[in-house]
Length: 82
Image (spheres, rainbow, N blue to C red):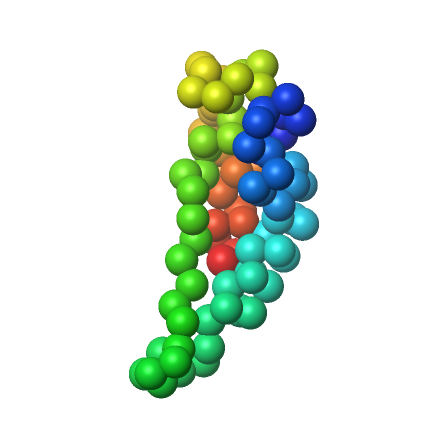
């Protein structure tokens, strides 16, 4: 999310794609073990829709102005890193 007026902004890891990528990768690594065959192992799941926080004017379920370049450069890197 990049608009501080959006009510769910606290659920994300910030507006910087690089920092968000580091945080997402660290969270998955912290939750998920190396061997998922262990009975106490946890499989991490990257949650939320990638462009959900891109609503205009900070209003939930509002219109979105999203180009492919913006989507790939700003919103998808944390998901790829995770």
